[in-house]
Amino acid sequence: MPDLHDYLDLRLTEACEQWRSILNRKPVAKGSKQVDFVPVETLTCLAASLLVNHRQYGGSTAHRAVEPVPTLARLFRRPNSSVLAKMANLDGSRRNGAKHEVQVAAQLLAEPGQLGAVYRLLLTAARSVGIGPDALPDFLGLADDDSDLLLIGQRELDESDVVAAVRPAVDVWRASRDDLDERTTERLLMAAVRVGQHRFASEVLRNHRHQCVFCGLSVSLPEKRAARMLVASHIKPWRACSHAERLDARNGLTACPTHDVAFDTGLLTVNGGLRIHVKPALAAAVETDPATRAAFGRPPLAERLLLPDGAQPPHTKYLAWHRQHIFEEATH
Image (cartoon, rainbow, N blue to C red; front, side, top):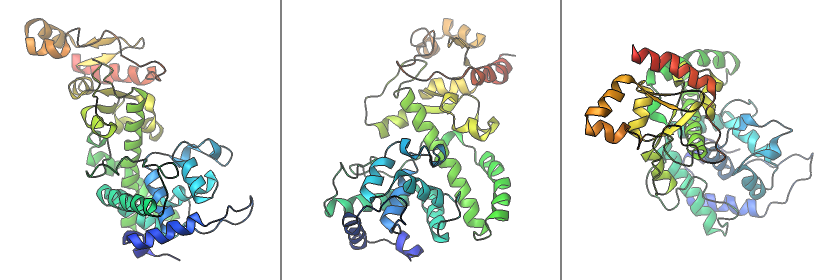
C-alpha cells in the first residue's frame, strides 16, 4: 500500500508508470470490488476537489456530478461514485480512506503552491504516455501558466474568524477520528474552509460571467487573471453566516475592487428589486467631487444590478440582512 512518501515525493517516472497501469485497466463489473486507487488517481481527485464539492452528491445522484468528475471516472475506469468517495476520504468525511491520504490532503491543501506543482507533474506524466486533453483536461488551467496555484476569495477570510469557526470542529473530529492527530485535523479543517471559499468565489464569478454587477466592468483576460481583477464576496459576511450560507452562491456578488469595498462597508446596498442604493453622504460627494463621481456617478454605477441572462439573482434574505446590518448602521 502506498505511504506518505509515494504521494508527496512522487517522481515523474513513477507517475508515468501509474498512468500506464490505468490505461491498461479493464472496467470492473457493477457490484464487483474496484481496484485500489494509485497515487496519481488520488492526487488528481484532490486537485478536482478545488472545483467540485462531493457533499452535493449522494449515491443516487452521483451520475449528476459536474466536471471533471465524469471525465476522471471514464479515465480511471470507475463509476462517478468512486471518484466522489475518494474525495470524501481525502477531506476526512469518510473514515474508509487510509490515514496517510488525509495527511496528504492536509499538507497539499494548506500549501496550494505545492499542490500546483504536483498537479503539473501529473499532467506532464499523463501527456508523456499518450493521455491527451480530451481524456484528461487541464481543469485547473495551470499547464500553460507558470504562476502558483491561486485560491481565490481568500481576502474575505479573517484568520481569527477562521480559527474561531474551526476550533470547535477540531474537538468534535478528535472525538470521532482518534486516528488523526490534532495538528493534521486542524490543518485539514482550515484548508477545508479556504477551499470552500475558493469554490464559492469561483461559482459566483461564473454566475456573473466575470462582470462587476455594479458597473459592468468585464476584464478580457484568461479566467485565472480576470479573477484577480474582480472580487466575489459574500453579501452577508462570512463571519456572520451559517455553514450553508457560506457556500451559497446566491449570497455572493461579483464586483470590481472599488464597488466591492463600497458595498462591504455600507456605502452601497441593494434592495429586493435589485435596485442599487447609495449612502446619502456618498451621493452628496458625487455632486461635488469629480473623482467620486467617476466611480459612483450614474454611470458608471448602474441603477440596478447588472445580471447576465440566466444568472441566479442574489437571495432577498441576504440583501435584507445587508441593508439592515451594514447599510443602515453605516448611514447613522
